[in-house]
Length: 384
Image (tube, rainbow, N blue to C red; front, side, top):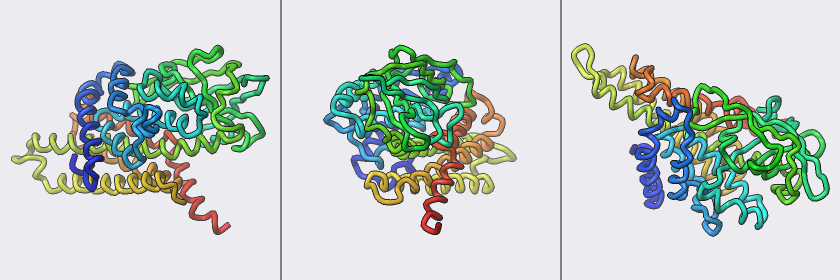
């Protein structure tokens, strides 16, 4: 794992080593079984919270770890070496916690953050709808003000953790069409009118549930509005900038694990009178995989630093990093499967699971096509 720990401070090295140890002890041995059984290991998530991983970006005074974005991408990469699915959920949970910390009132932060940080309460992010995925500003879920309450009606699609989680950041329309008419709300699992669809049957990410979130006249107090009316789209997009870095980092970790396993496999296998690891053609493949991961890692870390410093162009860098790292991670994992031959296709070796898990990273938190749109607009906008 030397590629993961290059050019880090002593504090960052300690964070990475602790997280890697956790991933190898508590995630990696169970990852294949959780995938096959579709088991969401909430008890293990709470163990992770004991290391401060339930509130990575939340301020220390509010129960979090107060880490930077640069620290965070190291954490999620290390976690994903054990299980990309669980690391991916932790990235989403931390996006929710950060949004409450960043945009919540003092009362909201006090009510939700302590238990989000310990993961006694788990969080989900509800933006996507059956007819509004990439075009998030076209969402149709509606929130109507009724005295001291809002009433929410609509359907959210592909919600990670849904049904098992406790707090849902729901984006809903309070005003006119377009992004300016969207607001964000804090909805609790026990709110009357909230229900969930069946657990989706998916290609990967089976260690966490994915369900529809159904809002049938969910009536919540007006003080559950996150931020001000009309600010929801901005809040959602700012949350996604960090979420995209988390998913990018998870792709790096999963792919690094696949590469490490390939090295060990080729060292053990012999063909045509010698170790496969000594075949120059295979060495060149490994070199390309390692080089591409190093390039993706550098871009993710650059974007994380830009987001932390709030420099101009940070959202575009986050989009670049998400697109490049998730494409690269999937490609490296797929080539690792090929290097394992028939063994790579067997579930017990864990490589095919990594391939399946990393494939969805090219879709969620904004498809990679949308990442290209974001980058292209930043390049061409000044010329219009």
